[in-house]
Image (tube, rainbow, N blue to C red):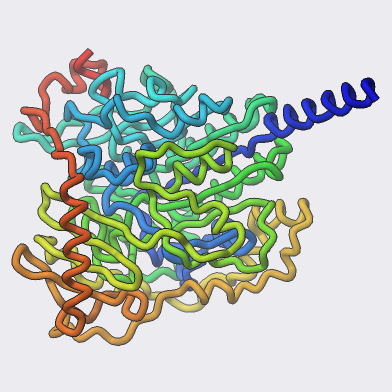
Length: 537
């Protein structure tokens, strides 16, 4: 009996150790300024994204995924699990010449995962602080970083232009950890894909992997060539009517192809079966105006930088081979702050208590209702605020009207016949991988993507509500996802309750601390070997 007990204890210890070793790998892929209507999983045949679509169709497409409306706030929320306004990171995004960053007293996602034994790697965009060494990714939990620290890069030259009072300032922005990555060549989306594949290939399988692949695409580049793609890929998009949109479509093809290659690399490494893949956009697309990229949030209202649905309701999906339920669309509310507690659950740990995020992992796996009922978008610098509670959304304050309309409808034009959706699916890398691992791809109903498609009634512009400091707008976003009709007069009690929610949340806002100089002369690339490098220390 004694020997049996010893053996039993030994076996249990081995099982526990084995379970510990098998913590799921996490691959987080982030697209930059991607609109609702820019992936074919949302119903459009203009821009085909077969690899992304198959991850949704064989995983979980997120029908109501929300982010902050602009990049620095959304990435700050992603890393901390906290609303950006609660940590002073709300408002306009960081410039390369600005001495500001995510407060270093905030513990962030890679630090949590590193403590749990993960290898942590960032490929691509950072954009939450670069003026000081202490702000950089490798000082904040990432084992390695290959990519850009600021808002975007030129896709071929890897430079970023800033407009200063003295003129345009240009600097090189591609880095490997803490040094400039000179000598790199190629289209930036491909460069990041290859680096991600290299991280996967070189990964030590004894440890779980956290890989964040934060693409530059499809963000705009330097003027005047604001959208850039290889000529052969642009030619393949000849069915897209508008020139700018055609180049954007080619950018999306490269992004989608790269995602397929990453999934294939995970399979070739033998770790796909124990990997959770998440694909999200950081915020809505910028159809026109400042840093436009010909993205489309159609038929949703508004652009990036607004609290309307086009700015905050964005593409998202989760894929895991462990998903057992046949339902491929999860329509519960999920917010960018929720990823930190979700990933902590996946890693086998409890999330911290002092965050905004909610652990929805078990609800998503079981296809149960979301426990999240409210979400906030607060920018006290621009002067707007919104709250979603249940089926309703209240917006108040100043929102730039030129970014608050319905744009992207004119970008939908197709010349002749678009490429075959089914052919694109069956030629994709993800399709081949799914077949190899035994997923019943032949049984996938491609019409499922119609379930996530947003359709709205004709918009009467005379009835559209534009909020200001003295006017609120209330929408039933379940019945009216395109925010065409203000229902505040019919629902005074709901208005009072939601204003009270907003009032309480506003008391939790941490004021943003801006540096005395918006364009700090110490950041001049000419002082740093023509790069946008750290400039305070």
